[in-house]
Image (cartoon, rainbow, N blue to C red; front, side, top):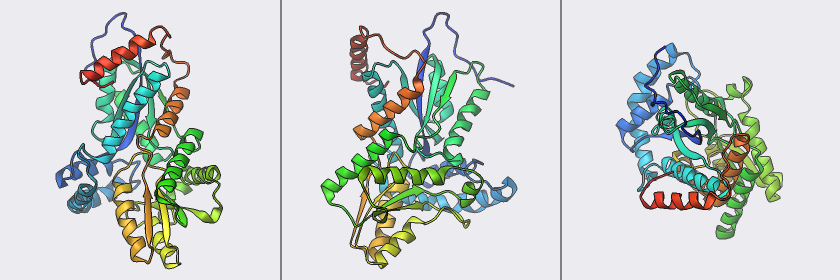
Length: 364
């Protein structure tokens, strides 16, 4: 086996601890070539598409990558922010906010973010952390509900990087936090703030990203964890069963996916006389194409065309303070046993050092 070039070893170098946030990924720009590169990487992952390669490869390269990039690029263009892709922008902000949260709690750790597909890649960020002296890395996927296509794929990418490293850091992985009290509280506070500002709809629809039904039958806990998140959120808000429902979005291909599907459900609700709905996507902790375009645009249009009168999309947690607090507490629990605590006397000097670095345009 050949190893990548290692950073020079320095005797006596202080060991470093890092937290790596990983989200799904995004194209570099809303153009067909950028989407083609992104989709080629994303849809080539056997965790994402569990079809034999001999069957899938002609479909992917002969049909999908020839037709889908231009359509997807047009959709991305409708949600692109001045700073870039929404998912990239919010994930970077979450990493920055988490770094500050952990520092306030007395931890000396490096916080970085990576994308499973696209940039910054897991391999590039892990290379950077190793060059900075990181000997312990907590990998925290930004997927509250575990799925093989998401959480396990992050583990694959980290371990694939480790195969080419001579000295691998000590690694820990956060597997799931669908029922974490801080996460549930952050969702509840987000909804309550939205209702206070915009009023409350007749029905709350919680739309999670879909996966093929066969993944449930093969033992993937994702479906059950989505429903548990919904149940805990309803209990936290004091909602009756009939006031809320769970749906699944983003179906791809002709196979049967988890049901009920979001957009058809919204059409049915409107046809049954429901005039107003609030739609939230608890499985996404950062707004992205699937929430801003698929739900806030396409699903809204479907509901209104079917006779609905008011459609309110509730934004993702993004960099909401309650979510960052919950994320910090989650990271702290998984960092236990690693020497990350800053001595009380050193904390003010560390904070001043950080302020100076930020003023010079550096990022932690």
